[in-house]
Image (cartoon, rainbow, N blue to C red; front, side, top):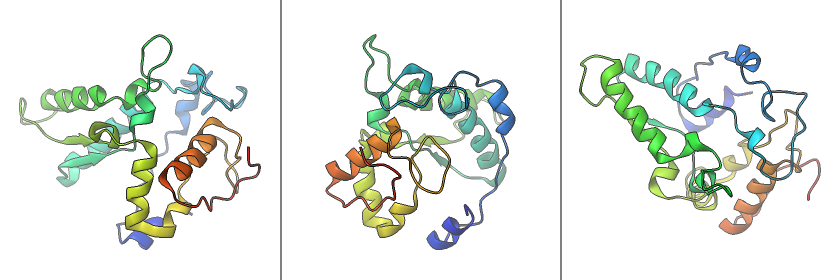
Length: 186
């Protein structure tokens, strides 16, 4: 199913990297451990430690191989809202992580000391989920409904997890009708 999206958007076929074995490392999180109940509200156990950093490492290796200049990932402003302790909800979504990763790449690949890639995200531009959704909808129209947000795997979005609830809220805030198929609407 994944291979239809690049064709609809005019992109190359994706390269799929199997990191499913990471589940053995990422125990105790809602997204990777089936024994952990998926919550309707944010809980720290929804955070998969260093997940975006690992994705950035893999995508950077590929980007350097093909001569790309920019990596884009989907962290957005709502992801870095503060917890009660003052930490971002999802620390590896914070723009500081992207900046630090750019700095790491300066010393982790030739020529040493030179900037290799820009790591861009909506969070770096101060874009909320609803603003990112609005801009995406302007470009890809109804294909936006084929994106996936749910923490559960299934034919349709569950409608109950924190991510589904955030998705519905973003559509509402963006003023775009939510045509996502949910199993349950909260």
